[in-house]
Each structure stands twice: as C-alpha cells, then as structure tokens.
Image (cartoon, rainbow, N blue to C red):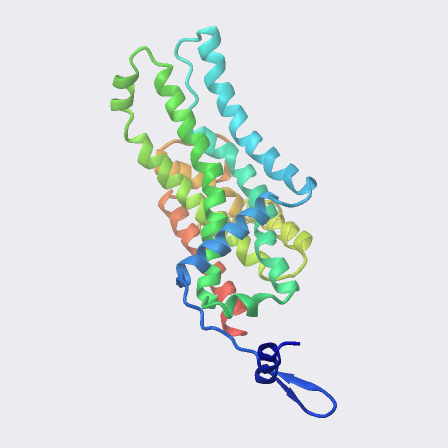
Length: 304
C-alpha cells in the first residue's frame, strides 16, 4: 500500500479497538428548489394515474375506459348518423346530454375518489406528504383539483363535441354558431358545477373509510337510494315544506341544474314535477359542497 493511500485512510478512519468509525461528509444541495407548486403537480399527476389505472394492472383500466367510451360514443353517434344518412332538422341538445351523463359521472366519482384517498389513509403515508412542504390544505386542494378535472373531462368534452357537431351539420354553420353562441357559457357552467358537485361529495365519502369498496357503495347509495327515499317522503307528506326533500335528493340535482341554466325541462324528473324554483337547486349544490368540505375538515384537519 502506498504512503498516500495510507494517509487517506488515516484521515477518514478512526480505530476504536473493536470497530472503526468512518467520517462521512455530506454536501449541501445546490440544485433548483421547485417548492409547493411541484408538490401540487406531483400529487395531482399521481392521483390521475391512480384513478385512470395508468401503470397498474390491466383490470384497473377497464372501468375508466368503459366510462369514457360510454360518454363519447353516443355523442359521436348523434353526430355521425345524421351526417351519413342526411337527416334534416335532427339535433340532439346538450341539456339532454347532461341528463344522461349524470349516471356516468356518479360511477366515475364512485370509482375514482376512493382511489385518491383510501390508500393514503390505510397505508399511513400522509406524514410523508406533509414532510415535503405540503400542508393538509394543499393535499386536499390537490385531490379536489385532480378529481374535479377528471369529472370535467367527462362532463364538458362530450357536450362541446356535440355542440360543434350540431354546428357543422347545419347548412350555414357560422350563422348557426352566431345565433347559438350563448350555449357555450351554459355548457361550461353546467359542466363545472356538476364536476365540483360530484368531486366534493366523492372525496367526502372516501374520507370516511379506508375500504375502497365501502366508499364506492356509500356514494352510490347516497345518490340512488337517498333519492328514492327523498321522493317517497315528498309524495307521502302533503305539505308545501315537503319540497325540501327534493332538494336533499342528490340524484335530482343534475336535472334541476339543467332546468336552471338551460331553461329546459327534463320530462319525468322529480325536480320538474315538484315545481321548485330552479334557483334553489343551485343552493342545494352549495349545501352539499359545504357539508362535504366540513367533513373533509374534520377528517384531515381537526383530527390531525
């Protein structure tokens, strides 16, 4: 062994009789610090991957693919069939599409929201998120953005595709577009409100349990069974105040919102038959969102 090597070892190794102590030197990190914005992006991107089954086994991708197909294929059919066979005057309105999309949004929320929250709570990884400069508010906001954007892709994109299809099927597309331009903000507002509505309730329900299957069942039960119970109470109680049960029926909110924004009635829905002023359904959405926020506060902020 050369003299220089021996001197290097003497500088870095100290003998203690039964063992040796090595001097470890660590360098300070001098790279760029991306801050909270990078944390937001990482959580949102990871939540998207979990919800859509990306980089997971193939069975995790079946339901998201099926739901996207169910949302877009009918719209493509509504556009393609009149274009191919040349049916004049055929037009499927966006407000009718939102009524049919409500079930797809419910199933998507029931599948995606537990994927975003339940595993993190069950595996006790929340402290790892909070140790990276991300607060509890940041975590919940990132999850809401992630789920809300997925809901928006299902509610907004098919409606916009239908609107554009109706436009270019006309003999004078630009004239039709100019006279129906007010449909665009209505489509955007309806899609945004429905996305926030389903995302908030979905995350609130998912925060109550660590079992994904139970969370999905509870969410579907709130919309289906809860709506049935509310309708039964509304019909059983002969009083003016019984209309409040309709506002508590989560499954009727999309119908009432369409009636409010588009001014069109969805035939047969309880929201229409009850005779409630449509503006009250906007208040009902606000109530559901506030209750969901309070539940998330209790589960993620107050208890920790």
